[in-house]
Image (tube, rainbow, N blue to C red; front, side, top):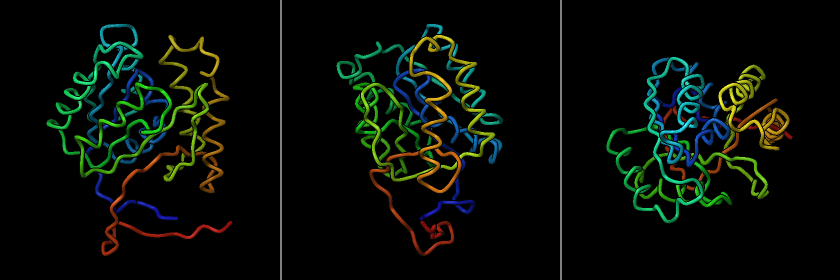
Length: 226
């Protein structure tokens, strides 16, 4: 198993979501892990919909909690939920504006094969603008049954996994009525992904392109037995 570890320079990250709560559901544990390990980490976050509503207020409070000690810069736009494909130009302009503001070491984004049209559309925009960056595509459990076979894993300690679930419940009251929005769903998926990487819990990601530099100390390999 290839492990990108402590030697990997990581000072700036970008996190993008089509909707408020996408980033936290898909990569909240990873954000907690990163920000706790790297105080002062810059996090540029872009969300395409929910601006000007209670959802934006939820997102601001939630991401502040998921990024403790970070230099968080959040933008929430007002694109209509479920209509991202017909607002392609606006979404593209927002991603390009974000690109002009930062040179990230890592990008957290939806998966390109996500069944939701908003998630998928945003995912397809990212590599057209961030062309030479590592993009980890997070997953969101949903009715569509589109979970696949991820290529990358971020182990989560039991404490981080529990904290993620608690923050999701605390900061997004508008979503609590949804039948899939509960502790069992979030921890259950994290447990399955943990099994797949020989950890208790994990978040998993798709990787469409990864360039290796095997001549540096930033990359180490660890073989994990069955």
